[in-house]
Image 1 (cartoon, rainbow, N blue to C red):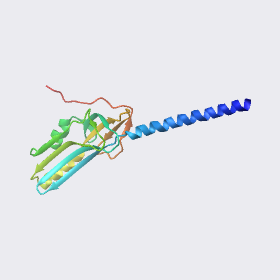
Image 2: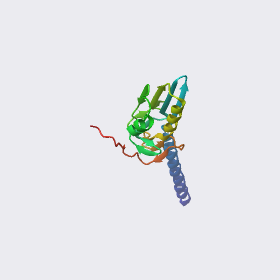
Image 3: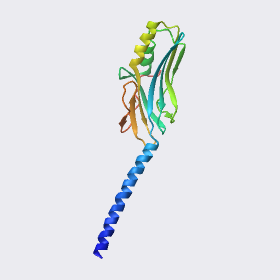
Length: 180
């Protein structure tokens, strides 16, 4: 009887370990099945007399990206959108023929979908102006904090050449612009 009792305890312990391990594997599979991966893409194109600068973000993951905050950066430091666009990208240039911006904060980006954050287009820019814009363009970035549906969160900073950094939660949106 003692041998049967010992075997029952050992079998029960093994069954509990297997159940715990299977639960851990299933949780990892659930999180992986809805893992968003935001990728930022800087595009520059020049054809004939048209010059275009585009910054877009695409969710190349398998789950929706719940964007919490998006902050513009200049040389890696957070700045208001008006500073990044008006004071850096557009200063001392003729107004662009095409100009689009999109607010990314508190948005959901579905898997496989892209969103153009900044789109600037000029006609008839001189080569020196294109070079100047290109160097300015490299200084401006966007830092995005986003989460999965399971509240696993990441911060991705465009232009820094690194993978998104896992964080426990997204910070509060920084806005230094005031409304009248």
